[in-house]
Image (cartoon, rainbow, N blue to C red; front, side):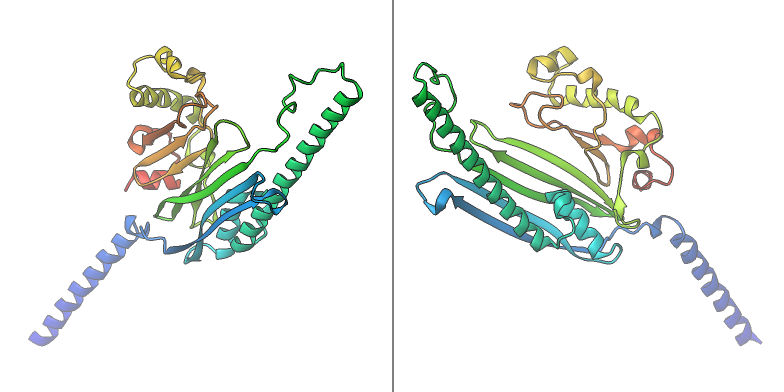
Length: 300
């Protein structure tokens, strides 16, 4: 009898332990931190001179494309399409990553060659017009002395910012120059829900009216970042339209909060760096939709 009682006690302890584990797994622990997504990188450095002559202007293209090579949650084809589209555009999203890179490179070179040919035709027409009618003054024309086309430069890269809890946040950075004195750099942010297999949008994570509510947080962050106290002082630094600033869908999510990037020319002059605003979840908890991926991150 004593032995049977002992076995019964052990059975009860084991059963209680299993119940505790089961209850624990039904909650937050089911929101696993590991995504099990692995990546590879395709790198391209390509310089192509007009007519193959190194004495001529050229187009210079550099690509660093980080893309998924394995995933346990979302199909690899879906991820490839999303990454290719985000990096190179919708014209390439039916191609595999390596083919998309090659197609983009070819298009870049072809466009440069076309621009150079068009430029040369315009210059020749201007000179012919001037020869036929010397009274026409082309001295003020941009083509008057520039018979040689410009060199182009572009650098395109992406980086994974956050890769946990079913969320994959990454940023595409594109810098280019088409013969001017300065280059233009833009940032495109993307958040992908690996559990659902689609892009995360603002409407999905925020309650109605979030755009107005975020305005004051954007302004406060920019004031703090630039060590000023008023919007007028921000405008003196090269910002504009700050009082009308609204969410631009260009955001990233991580464990701590949401990050918005405003590219040059949106609310700041081109000579300034692209403003980046970080807002912690605790500051916007009431704005987050219940059961959204952002609210789950906020509750961790």
